[in-house]
Each structure stands twice: as C-alpha cells, then as structure tokens.
Length: 164
Image (cartoon, rainbow, N blue to C red; front, side, top):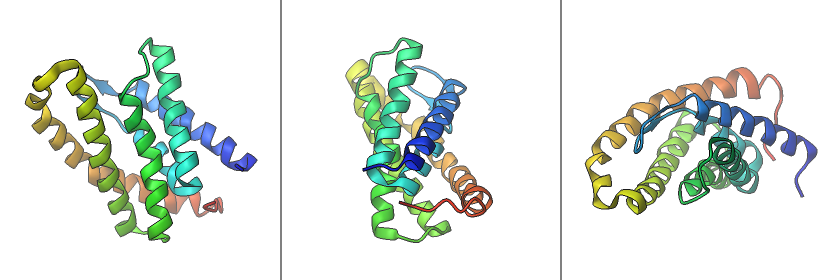
C-alpha cells in the first residue's frame, strides 16, 4: 500500500516531469530533455512500483494533452522510474557512484525502448539517427548525475525525505 506522502510526492514529480517534457527540444526522432530526472527521483525514493507508475502517469497526461496516442514510447517513461527503483533495492546507498550506475543503466534501457518504438514508425531509417541519439545520451550523463547529486544533497537530505 502506498503512503499518502508517496502519492503526493509522486504526483508532484509527475507534474514536474510533464512540464519539463513540454519544454524539451524535440524533433521526430530526437528529444533533448531532462524530464527523466523527476522520474528517476520517484523510483529512487519510493521504489519501482511508484517510480513506474509516475512514469506511466507522466506519459499518459503528456500524450493526452498533446494529442499523441499512448504507445511503445510509454515504456521508456515507465523505465525511467522503474529501473532506478529496482537498482536501489540492490545498491541501497545513494552516492555519486550509485547515481552514475542508475543514470547509465536506465538511459541505455530507455534508449533501446525508444529505438524499438521509432523502428515501428520509420523502419530501418531509425539507425541513421542512432549515432546522434547516442551522443546526446552520453553528453546528458554527467549533467544528470550532477543534477541528481545536487538535488539529493540540497533538497532530499535537508527535507529529511526518507526512501520507502
């Protein structure tokens, strides 16, 4: 059973993710955004179930408001919350090394999921943009790690937000 605090914070993180997704740089097959950071935080703090649910809700509301149907892209949003939650069950402690592992593993799985979804629309043309998508992913890694570490130090620890 989810606590009221997990539901409220999950809703807040989903809302933040939706806003960040709306203000992303997006082309047909490439999105540069940091909407994934609130989703990773939800998984780390509240576990894989809440993290995955926050990812689903984020994509569902975004798709509904933007007129896109839910599809395979929803899986990557779910993975952004689910995988960090699963990894925290194993890694336990939050530090730069843990955050780096979470970011890299989750990014690879989410990108693979999006590649499959793009393949559904474009066929083998998806592979033409794959190098650019990989470069963007790698460039985002240190930025995501720094932001997550700073949020942990400056928000989560001072507010005494405990992992569930």
